[in-house]
Image (cartoon, rainbow, N blue to C red; front, side, top):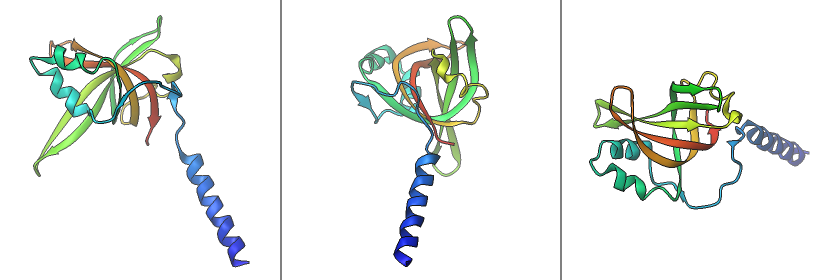
Length: 154
């Protein structure tokens, strides 16, 4: 009897954990090379490098997996659908300085509409491609990436 109860409890816990996972929004399968070593901080550093175009060209043929927190909407268009949102990632430098790194994600599919209704503060894992060097409204260099698939982490 104790074994049956333990088995049912374990099955219940596993079922709850499986249901708690966020579904993938966007492309369910991606074929190609997935770069898991590049981070938001790496891409933000490339934006300020004088050889940014050369460094980004090495990343053109692969997909990248990034994690971070969605920030404010930088640009929005209805037709064709497109929303550009900042992806933020903070890192400590030493014990007293927090550095905030950012790149910008371009969402071009309406499947992302619900996620992007109020994006601020949502932690995500995102598969991106097509990195390009662009300029923000104030003229500062930024990295713009195409978002393909997202999993919400919070």
